[in-house]
Structures are given as structure tokens and as C-alpha cells.
Figure 1 (tube, rainbow, N blue to C red):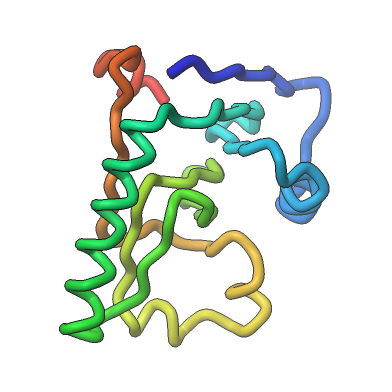
Figure 2 (spheres, one colour):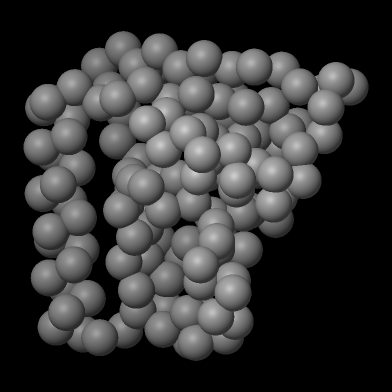
Length: 134
């Protein structure tokens, strides 16, 4: 999948709140941000990839519904990682303790933590070496 990266370093420093607002005001676009602060505009996924992702989410959801060990997030859920990057994995899970430690305000924004488990699907056009660079 081809994504567009807009390098912002030394031009503009978006605060976390500005990045969140940018995403909220442009909900038809899917943004991520790398550790350097560059914007990554994600393209929509093809049908087969979307269907596979839906199946993965369903399996993860069903497992969590039985165990009640945590919270599940889909590919629209944003996470503020310790590196400073803002990422949205295809599927993610955090233990209930992490969720309970978040403030009500933190729950309404991109979660300031790294998921304990995540799934990132590779499209046929993705290469492993390019993925590792992100």
C-alpha cells in the first residue's frame, strides 16, 4: 500500500492536541505520525485486506469477550507511543489495568501508551524492509 509522508521537521511542530484536532477535522483522511513528527497519510485498504482485518478483529473481540482481560481497538484507534509517534495498528489489545489507569480525558483522545498486543497486516505491495523503517 502506498502512503504519503509529509516531512514537517524544522517547518512546523504540531502539538499532540493540534495533531488530534487535525485528525478530527479531516475524518475522511487517516493520519499517522512518525517519531520525527512527519505526517503519514494512509490510503484506504483494498477489499481483501479489509475483510481479513475484520476477521482478525472479530477473533480478538471474541477471545476478549470470553476472558474479559482487556480492551480491543480497531484500525481507527490511535496510540501515542513513547517514541513520540502516533500510530493506528490494524488491531490492538491492552490489559484492563492499563485502561482503568487512564483518565476519562485520556480515553477520549489517542491513548498515551503502547498496546500490549497488536496486529499490522501487510498489503501485497508492502515490503518487510520498508515496514521495519517506519
